[in-house]
Length: 424
Image (tube, rainbow, N blue to C red; front, top):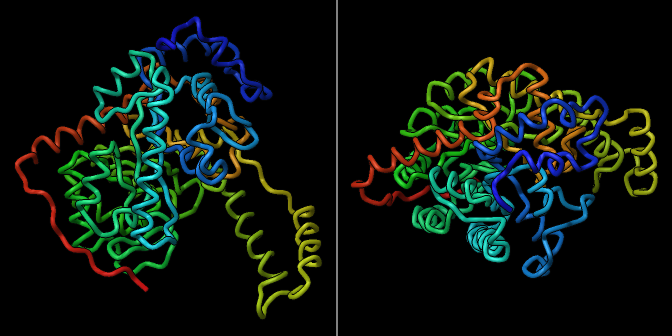
């Protein structure tokens, strides 16, 4: 496929997912979107398709046809990526933070292999890239420029040499933690141990800067965010996070941190996961988890302990009385605009988290739906220049800045710090 042109407008909006009620993407904005995405690659900071394939398809993923997959099972396939106008992707090479770290390294290499396999099997669609210039060149050639994001500091197993190996294989960023606090950094969703980064954590940030890899602060605690912002020499990213002022989860970014991201020159790439978009959905999720524990929490707790069928009936009754709130594309746009209001137009991007989440907002059900979000923002009065910044120009600027920092550090020796033990 050649680079996006106005002739592809019908393809961009062919998916039924784009034809929601009052969806403007099928009307006056289609040509504008196509024009923007011809000049600027739409770059997504986070998609978990490699892990989804590993979980659901197992070994068949290495040989199965990935051009068209069941949309009820996957948010991503090659045809829908093309329909959505995607120009660049940081593929997440996530593995479970609950695994022993040496196993995390093995599984990370497996996931990296999957991304390399995509480029090898579909060379007309994907091209592995390392730099902002290579991303632009891939887009110009009609390919989806592909890097990787290592989604958790545990995946380096306390070794800067492993980090360097990931970089050589095409990893573009390291998320400092995933869901668990590790020996050198606190997670947003685990008990803190370090009040942010340890000295080894600071050494990891320094080595990322030296390599030209991006420091990703999604999933980390606010103290870790602030420590990383204090020590980094290059702009940081949040590869898939939202505004905490609109959805009050520690996975999102507070206004105080947003202001520091702006001063740092970094970027927050907006996440589509319903529980990080909608405050009502977040609260409902907490209540739902509490109701499950209230009904059946073996071995000693729960109103229906020892009666799983009774617990299931009670939960079903609760769900009927408390319908799950639906996140919307409008709420995603609200997060984008809040980040712009606090940090500025140069500091926002898109980090969907497709194939890494369950519930998605209405109107954003798969990778074919990126244009619907752009159209929603155009409906709100966004200019083509600002849409281009959101779509790709901002992250390309951040990538180029990280490359410039690495060039300035090229004479420094490789990092050799020793990490502390992981917390019990």
